[in-house]
Amino acid sequence: MLNVRFFGVRGSTPCSCESNQRYGGNTACVVVRGDTGDPIVLDLGTGLRFWGLEPQPEPFRATALVTHLHWDHVQGLPFFTPMHREGASMRIIGPRQHDRTLRDAFDEFLRPPYFPVSLDQLAGSFEFDEVGSDRFPIGEATVTSAWVPHVGPTVGYRIELDGRSIAYISDHQQPGCASTRVDDEVLRLCEGVDVLIHDAQYTEAEFLAKYDWGHCTVDYAVEVAAQARVGQLVLFHHDPSHDDTMVDAVTAQAAHLAGGRSVPVIAAYEGLELQLG
Ligand SMILES: [Zn+2]
Ligand SMILES: [Zn+2]
Image (cartoon, rainbow, N blue to C red; front, side):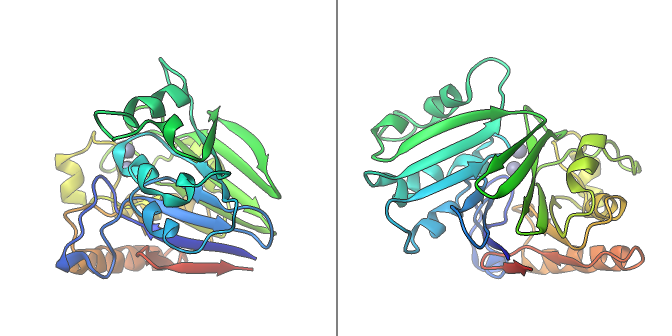
């Protein structure tokens, strides 16, 4: 059994407000668990704080698979209270940087004056591992990472566990407005997975204005899902300007497009839980 829970589904910046209540305003954070073993958390956006409010085993242990270091993917870490306790440990796996270690990159944003304490002053301990296009085990899971076109070093992940598989491509620059070409590495990550969690930031009109901001259209997310023959597409990384009505509308459009290609589509929302197996 593979359990997938969504704590933050928003891209770019937290945007809690009345018109976003159904989908939620927290940024990227998804928790994956198998029948046994420690949890795997996909990205450390502001949704992470809400996972931390739930009862956690003592001592807390988890592995984080971080796609890249933009704020919306790391900003929840300082507010994740399980890591404020002695004995807690987190292994953070993320993309190799061009000019510094992954630990140095975290040390740089998690210290005064940006936050009152530094990473090494938190009670829990952190371990860092850098990846690019790699394949490695986490407990019983097999994880594949690969470079994904975005802005700056960014990877996506595929997790295979308990006979099920998911792919997580949170931020993905599509090649051009009318292009249906999908990066080979991305296709390899997504090929045949049960669930694909994918960037769905823009409408076609928004993409025209922001074509090099590192993201893609909802239509392109459907294209990736169809080419990779996935079992289900979960639209993710909703634009902060998209209120609930807008997310409903783009999801309906995606479902219409995907229906012709036999891919079920849903939109991620805070509190969504998928049970695979
Ligand atoms: Zn993002
Ligand atoms: Zn990003």
